Length: 280
Image (cartoon, rainbow, N blue to C red; front, side):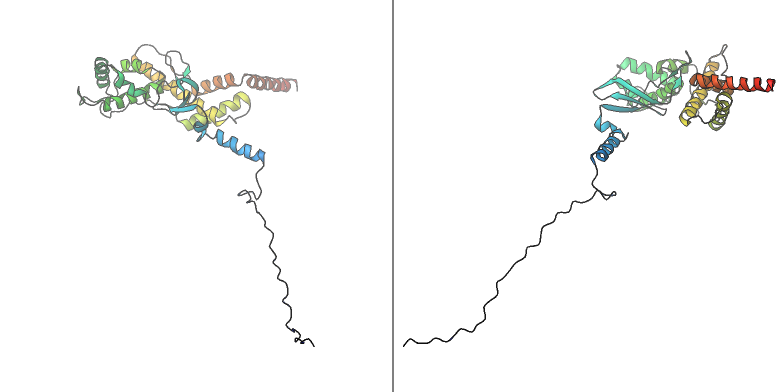
C-alpha cells in the first residue's frame, strides 16, 4: 500500500505587478509671454536687434566716425573707409558760399601730422604756435603729442566754422586765439530757447501751426547761430560785410523753403478770409 503524504496547506504567493509611470516632457515657455514665440515674433525680434544702433556695426559693413569738436557722425564702409555712406548731425555754414556743409575732420584725422616729413611738421608747428593753439614752450625735438592735440583743436574749430584747417590756420596767423586763456575766440549768438520760441511763432504765422518737429527746429537754431558766428568772423577781417538776417526773417525763409505748398495754401486761406469779410 502506497505511503500517504500530508497535504501542503501553505497559501500561494500572489503575483507581483510593477506599474511604470508615463514619461512626460514639458517645453519651457518663452519668458515674459507664457507661450512659445511664433516665427513672426522671432523675425521681429531679430529685425529690432539688427536695426539697434548699438549693435548695427556688428551685423553690417558700416563703421561710425565721430566729428572733431561738433556733434556729428560719419558712417563709412568698413571695407573701404574712404566710401562715405551718410552723415548724421551738425552742419556748419561755409563762409564762402553760405551753404551748409558737414564736418571735414573726424577722430584720428589730427594724427596725420605725424605722417608729414620733418620740414612740413616744423612749418605747421610754428604756425600753431603763432596762432596760440600751441604754447611757445614747445621746442623742436619734443614729442609730437602736444602738436597733435593742437591740431585736434584747430580741426574742431574748422568743423564749427565750415572751413579747412589750413585756411583757418592762415587766418589765425593774424587773428590768434586768446593767449591768456588758451581758448578759441568767443562768439556771441542768440539764446537757443529764444530762437526756438521765435521759430515756432514764425511757423504759426507762416503755416497756421506751431508744431514743427523738434529736429527741424534744432537744425534751424544751429544754422542761425552759425550765420551769426560767420558774420563775426568776417567782421574780424575788416572791410564791408553783410550782417546776419533777423531771426524772424531767417525763420520765415527757411519754413517757406521746407514747406512751400503748405505756406502758399495758408497764405491763400488768409486772403480768402479777408475777401469774405469785405463781402460780408
